[in-house]
Amino acid sequence: MITIRPAPVRGRDGRPGIRHGIPAMLLALVAATSAWGQGPRQVVLTRETKDHPPSMADAGLEVLFRFEPTGLSLLRPYRRGKIPVLFVHGLWSGPWSWSRMIEDLEADPQIMDRFQFWTYGYSTGDPILYSASLLRRDLEEVRRKFDPAGTDAAFDRMVVVGHSLGGLLAKMMVQDSGDRLWRITTSDRPFDDLAGDPDDLGLFRRCLFFKPRPEVRRVVFIATPHRGSRVDRGPLQGLALRVVRVPAPLRAAHDRLVARNGPGAFREFVRRGLPTSIDELGWESPTITGLGELGLADGVVAHSIIADLRDPPRAGGSDGLVSYDSAHLDGVASETLVSSAHNCQAHPAVSREIRRILADHGGR
Image: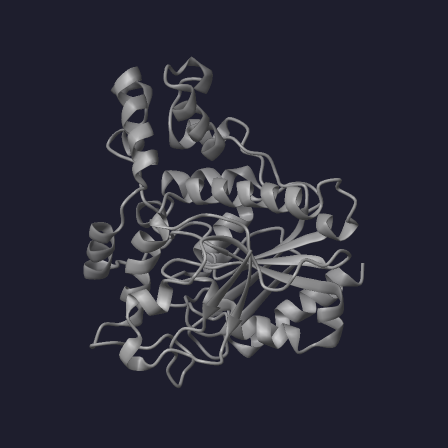
């Protein structure tokens, strides 16, 4: 199936445009936390078209986001022997946020000869563990669709690049939860002691118990809040929390499990209602803490790209949303600081570092 999605309206600075005085970030928030959650999930072949970009007069939600696919998307037909690079966007964003970086990478013949580029779109207000479970499912589906016999060695050298919240999803592709995440975030009781409908139990098991994806061998974290964010989001957070809605099937499964097992079966953080990603991104929230304690799978190479508002950039600063002490991760193969605000995917230094990492990966 081929899905064509138009390029979003952008201002002179390359960022999404503004309509009727409403900041594009808020438009993206509404779209990412409501419209996407209602759309179909599928692995699709897609290619942006710039022939007829929408005008500013038409830059409403329905134009900016209606064609943004939810799920894993291949930007060109699948090619055996080319290493997949999967880009995962952050909060209040979408796959379009990678457009400039992908264009830069595709302009390099050596990179294009060895790699193919994919994106993953998701409803960014959903619980982080739920979004990661959908990404794992999509990776399983794309493997079944394009390499069911597991004979394409390049598939097993996948690189996942995540920005902000997307970096946490990327990290979960190379982590083994064991029962540690369950105990930190949800309950002291063994999961198997819970009573409930098999479908409800299965849904929560997929979110909270997972193994590293074997095809992912390298991850890149860009401005990723590994310890959460200390930023007081004030009115914007209040708007976000009013707009964000946990998907109805997930919320209903939670409510049934709490009712069936009694409130003592779950921690207060979960018992009072499923947290959204906005809740979970608070500084050292239970989810953030649990993921931080898991570490990364053996044999996976990780890199950090950290933005800093100062020039020159240096340790100890912040990009306005994520501080250095949250974005820093011990044990990575490289850590690169760039002078930029949080949304740094289009920064030339970030593109250069991604190109360097891919050149190293492709040469091995």
